[in-house]
Image: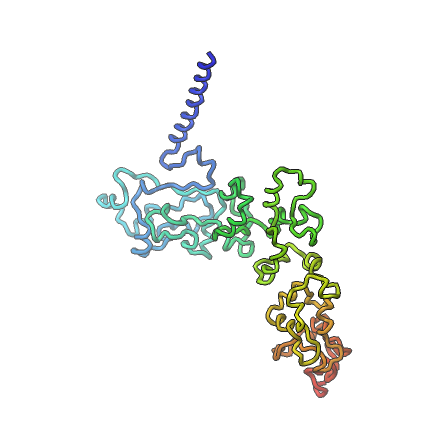
Length: 418
């Protein structure tokens, strides 16, 4: 008896599955996309190739007809729901629509149905966009195909839209264009392994532009050291990392893989990335606190982890006309590298220990500027005491409206200039 009931239930369930599948198939109709499936799509495209004979390439390239000659309603359309397909009157300009012998040129036998239009759940105005855009900017490759469905991009993708909707030329807020925000997640984001693989996905795909949707600080929600550690020091170099509270998790290895920004030997190789600027370390790390915890020399070059160049005997040479040594060459070659540790505003005593001019006398201090660095005399040092020049040039007469021929002002202005 139990076997009979089991067989009955299996047949009953199979019948339900067959019924649903058959109903879905029958609802697909002419459009190929029925109501059952439509709720999953924010965009509904139709195939008109069975309703009419047409060739975009023939019209736009061979006949040199403009898009607006056929899609005349587009230039005044303010809604994505508008049907912008050509009307009979648009065809009359070239075709003799009254000659019944010519019907077969465009129409299939006994097929005279109204063309179906693409439906999109977006706020869109062709009228506004056509003022600045050409049709082909958004609807690509229509000059190479017969029907629009054959085009590589009949409707613009997010990458195309973002070229303008980048919050500079136009708003990049989702709701400014999308009327339905419930299904905007890209398909690749729905993969079960996306969190683990999203880095390589972004690097390998030219189409993948994370910043189209994500703000600058979005990554910090996972990749911020502060999420897993209260300290950002050399003792916690590989943060974010699992803490004591999460150490009991059985998936802590996966957690580490997800949240760690750098490989486990990065402490020994990060200098390579920092040198050739493949990464902007300051995006996450404060150079004053984070880097200095290891690279601070504390007054003795040997006690800190200093760059190899700093340990060379000729790294710094003191004295006028000595050239400054290796550090001068490196600074001229890549000053940004120096700035990553040394404050360019002058608060770092390492630089201002030598690079200052307190007497206003030429030739008594290390040379800092290249020959001809000052292209004209219209500098901010004439207007404000806050000019960066006065960080190093600090003789008593180094000020706006100083005495001509004296100290800093005397470098350019002789006594007669007063």
